[in-house]
Amino acid sequence: MNELFQYTFFQYALIGLAIISIASAMIGTYIVTRRMVSISGGVTHACFGGLGLGYYLGWNPVLTAALFAVASSLGVELMSVRGRVREDSAIAVIWAIGMAVGILFVFLTPGYVPELNSFLFGNVLTISRADLWAFALFTAVLALFFALFYRRIVAVAFDRDFAFVIGLPIGTISTVMTVMTAVCIVLTIRLVGIMLLMSMLA
Image 1 (tube, rainbow, N blue to C red):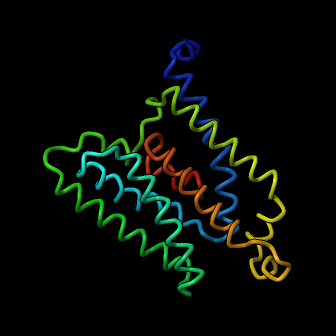
Image 2 (cartoon, rainbow, N blue to C red; image 1 turned 90 degrees about the vertical axis):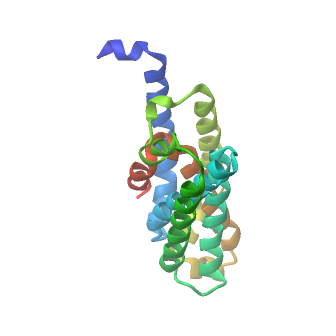
């Protein structure tokens, strides 16, 4: 067993999982409290649309997936707040659209899409030094945001009406946390996959 720790890729995998678990714990606590557990599945499957579009256009699929993730998470927030649509219904819409768009563009992409399975099931052994820096930077920003606005985040998560009455910026906090959730999903989707990511955030 000790021989495994001599390999760099195994060390990176352990460090990456430790950092991801910290970020997932903070994000997961928030979305569970908001009763938005299904948003992890909705945004991850919406990312599939970005992956398909990226492969079809020949762009970096991670970047297009990030755009889809942020847009879909903000779309859920917008529909639930301004469109008077229940959050679970908005998530279901985003979920279906993302999967449909992804399947469409993967089908239209000529040839075989070689890395698609890695996004579906992940491969934690592919974590690189750049990935570790990205995880660490995101987790540091997330932890700083929680440290500065912890009481406001808790108030918005548990009782939005009370937070609105006492004058808290519920729109800003909800938007920032929604974007943070999307970024967390994008950073981890290729490493742990869509299936495991949903359970980590739930």
